[in-house]
Length: 225
Image (cartoon, one colour):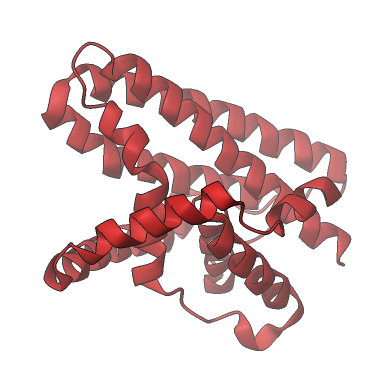
């Protein structure tokens, strides 16, 4: 966990800064109206999945052993990264039309995994504050290093300061960082002949990374008690 915390606080490398600069430049060419539409779409999609927490997730674990809670959380990560790989392979093999369907399907798999990991650690995801923490985890995983530094500090303050627990994320920044992080990989998924392999690999790898980020975030909360 401490190694992970150090990684979250690294300064952006030269390649990170150059890559982010190019992405920001490309985003500047996209009309503001398009940005607003994409932001609203991702906001509503993500909020819809998050607020459905009371229906689609189990009750928080009452298991007293932290070790057992960890094992359950990791099992849910394994299940969902394999589910995401299958989904990515199927949509990747289906060309552009099915490739477009991958975005909401994969997003729902990732959110469902985060909700179940939270419940495995004993947190009640019916609580809106816990759902905001989940959004912090999501942003921490899918972000440039510079933004990751900021989100990590926000997360630390969120844990320590109750007044921050109802703060909504910056949805414009949320969608832009997320898209910038996955755009190139998901673009390759649309290429005929390699789409299925790319889709399965990318979904498996990035879902696993998100799951690991969630595990580390809940470890951090546990050891701050």
